[in-house]
Image (cartoon, rainbow, N blue to C red):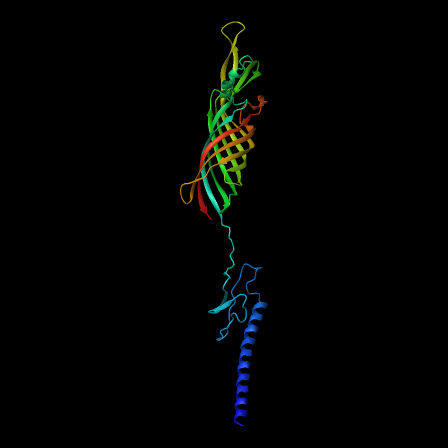
Length: 325
């Protein structure tokens, strides 16, 4: 009888232990299935893993008994794999900013025929006259620049917009001369201009930079040429069959021109501070402008239009002030 009671007691105790184990395992498995349905566990197809949370239950163990392959162990309220690394979602933000640039450049430009100095070439001299020819057809042009550049951090791509002002005084030019019949009723006259000029050039520039060294751009040009225009009257000379030109009138004339150009620039960057960069550069430019109007009081006698040439090679230096975000 005693043996029977002991046996019954052992069976009841075994049943209770088995039921508690099944209950515990069932709760853990239900939690595992729930987490899998929410796709919160780390997998080889996803690099971003947000650790799941475990309900505030004591005695819940997600260890090797449940996922022996991953070897997961409980840490506080999160489950971490021994071999896994935690990666949070990161968005690589691209910072856009505006840089300010100022600079100076000087260059040698081709004068063309309208602004060249007098030159008498000789077919016999040939290349021996090349230095004189170049000296008569080249001129120096000063320029200052101010603009802004839009770019992205850690990127060589940029787009710049700026205004350039150029100036020079040219003297001893060949200029224009025109004979005018009956300029003074029955007396002939002549006009002369562009022998000494003040050159001013304004340009709106757009520059694109796709790498650290080379950039290219275009410019829209407005230019003004200031010169003295003189009207001469033909009078008899000191001897028979001779005549001379006597100044009769003069006027300050402005000739306004418009055009466009293209340039390629080689840049070198040298940082001198956290937000200041030196930019020495060399550029080649092809730029032309044509006269659109003038205020000459004798424009009815002029049939010519002025052509300006700003093509040539420039070298200069810019200061870049960055960090305006």
